[in-house]
Length: 507
Image (cartoon, rainbow, N blue to C red):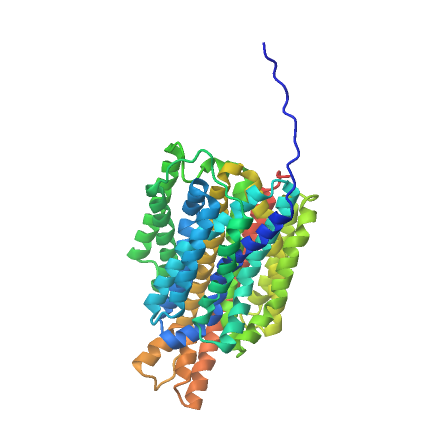
């Protein structure tokens, strides 16, 4: 007769020096992919001048990359669990580098959009691999919490670093050079990863479910398109059809996951308040952050007249604060519940966003810099807490899929940030701008689409006419900034409420 014994808790082994070198290598793709989310914001004026895209094309140049990324992250996270996370990381790194070179020399807006889509495909291989590998490299939770803090700070900081990197590059090179940055960043990863990063995978993987992958894409793409089309053309048949397709595909995806023995996405994870709450916080806060960067970068350059590098430096203090906040919050989160520390941090971000909204868009460079410090302090802290909860809530063999969900929230937030705040801004600009007489039909179309288009047209006009056009364009743009900023405040307040209510019982 056997007797049952209580399991003895065994302390997880602490990682050594090699693990921290591995973390440094894994931060390279994290920084690169997050920088790519926002680096084009500062290149938009140069792209508008060189490729003359329409307003819709300009938004798609920004949106298509995180859209494809968001649609494939869960799939790629699950694929990494099956074939090996390090292997998938290396495949994605090589593909990302090759396509980046092609994007740098794209001769038209259409080809640039296609290249950005391909970058999203290979980028989706990178991000879940990095976070899930950390789950298996750092077994000790205190060490893992710090490693994830570094990861989250790097991701959030990369989004803010994009405009600064873009400003430095655009100060000396053409817009295509922002894509060539991928080559020197990813080369050390390809060389060092096989030596420093151990391979890991799910010991009992299921098959890759292609219909589930297609259903994710058919959910996200139509929904984001409907948001963009609603802002541009209003509530019409195409808007309704897109929304219906997205919602129906999402319902079918959920039903399929519940039936499969080895689902692409284990929906039982969402029954855990720590997991689902953290994912929603990621989604809302990144939507607010990236949407803010979309209009702030253009305001600094095209309204206040700063050079790209100077405009990027305005955001530098916020970037530094975001990194520090993500690291300082680690010892605090060990002693204070997530349901307390995350909402307090997000209050600070809401105040920063509100300072821009109250001005109605008429804000100085100093005001933007201070607002971004507050935004970085709150979001940097909250993202570290939420990401640690996502990984700690998932079993090790499902680390890739859980990381994919977390990354999907990030990237979907990046899509929605540009799609919602960006389209509100574009719609407000189009309805408010007053074009002076004397413009050709082509000039009227370009100047009436975007502020960047107006700046390009103004360069072709006599002084008085150019001044009148830019005065009207800047006023129209800033009127939209005020509206978009209030939406940003609402998003952060919503994240704060989710953290306070959804995480109130999480230790």
